[in-house]
Image (cartoon, rainbow, N blue to C red):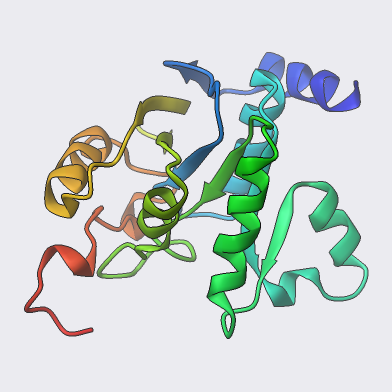
Length: 193
């Protein structure tokens, strides 16, 4: 398969080291963080192809216009219409129920950093579908990337995010100055919405 060959070549010549605590054995939300560069996409594909994980990822609908659409879909992209977020959850639920093993890649810190909070969509989708969350990472300081632990979320947002924060505490991303601390607005009920 071409993707396996490309992945093998990439990891043979890359300065990056791939580490993986485990390979998903059931559908999972695959967090991609810290998301600080467009190169994160290349690393995500290289990880998925090397570990033979079918991945899907959510992208703004404008990425799927014109000639890019078929390419993005072939690479696992799912266009998101922000006016109809319920459809995304329904599509994910349908895929989970189909029985296939896949990772739904979500970058909760948004578009390459600079945000105060992570977006909580990954949390809501995981809770509504019963999917676990696998912590994918990029760390330029150690030149490592890969998959960390897989967690089942409990519904206690603060406690779940404490576990996620502990894992990402020493992960810097490709551009550390763009890193967003893993926290959700929902952890602080008095914060502005």
